[in-house]
Length: 406
Image (cartoon, rainbow, N blue to C red; front, side):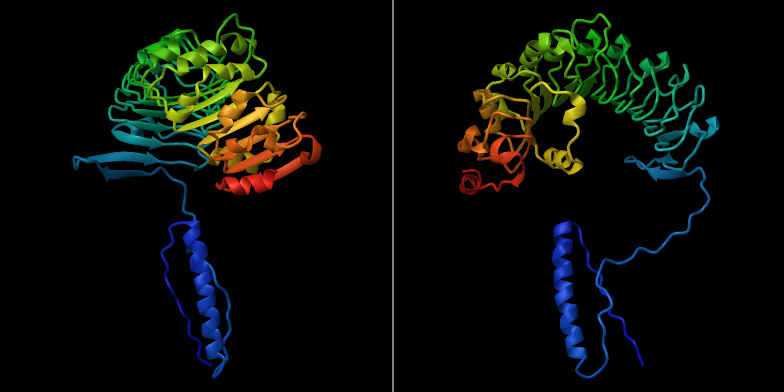
């Protein structure tokens, strides 16, 4: 008996196209099999995406490749990510390289002072065993533009780091042992992106105000009794007029925030180029410093309003957090009472709404149905009455919202 295979190649670029293609192929395949069965034996074995050919794992080795830059000159890059390396490349292999990718390995040490006159990008993130950077490590990296040390165990920065005067992006995300940003950070005048999310810093040095080219600033502060009265010195934020994205996360129990948050918000509202704002606001009445026109001007905001214990609010299903982050304008109202007018004002411009532990409101309609015009997604936990638990998606149409919430 002869057997024939029908092979089709379909270019698919997104999940929506994939679903349509699979539906069309299913109908086509079933119809073809039905016709073939009239005069021969035919079976529908499977319908699905093509299987990628299995690649044999070769030896893990140092890879150094040549690329052509825009000028046509040959450059080198080193790629050794996720190779479970415990030692970095030999020091002579760092010379002449433009990019070095060593992320997601098991590195615990780095060369003392590699000569990297052309190095522009250095990825070291995800090396959890890396606790220290040699004192002279950055001495010979005069054109380094991007440095990622995220999710490492470093506790401080070597003095040679502050020689990176060409640095534009510096990431320390998830470095839980990093506790203090030195005042010398102000020497990196060309810095455009600084990510300190997930670090244990307690305050910003006033020298941050000298980073006039800063466009993206991500901060998270940890509460320690260090003697600093303010997490961000007055005048720092208002001096960073090039900021486009700003995120500030603070421990809810940090008393310093309550005494200075009004100054911080006032300075934020003076940033005319700001388009994205993520902020924890411990008290509802602080929202009085944010005008409704300001919410119209910015492209994206994410507000958590209300005092909460951080370990509790984060105990939500991962899909809930993922869903909230999908939307460019979101509001979390935590441990609230009643429905303040300022919450209604923010809700009017939000696309995602998360209501957590609000025990005095029986139904969502008390927030005002007219304030749900822009809402696309809503989730509530721990409310009272008939809304003890609900997981509700709202369509863009207000009339549908009214029928769901009335």
